[in-house]
Image (tube, rainbow, N blue to C red; front, side, top):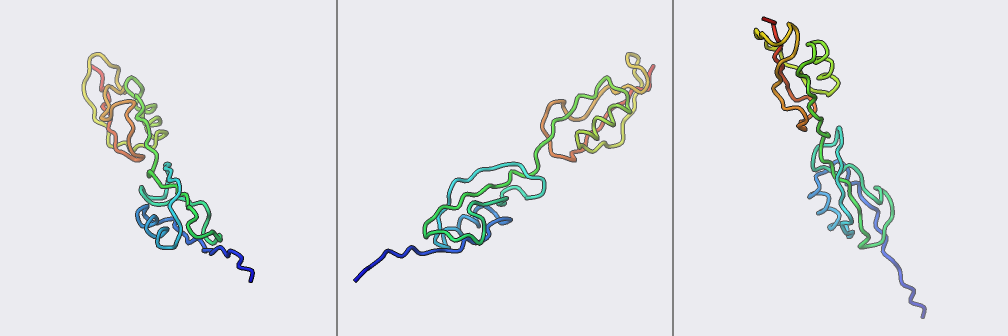
Length: 143
């Protein structure tokens, strides 16, 4: 009698878009194993959710096969530009390019800076912040 070894094949479920812990539990429950888990920033997949997997959903895999996951770190942070010393128009453009949200500028009399020059900002230049973070600027009215 010929007793050939028969490998059990499992159709890999779709784990994308679910929380990492949920995906890992489901992988184990389906007879597969969790493979390498890597992380990357993603514009639309919430932090902690699975962006992609390997093998992809619908693929046949042997029992115990590992499923690698890529998990979202959320939206990539943006660097705060240094707008002090720029004109208000240039600073506004720079803030828009950095994908930050400019709140109504504050004005103040300043003997040292020409009118229309940015003399302060609410977020520290070089810091990493979330896209859309509010930033305010202080603009000189001149002497």
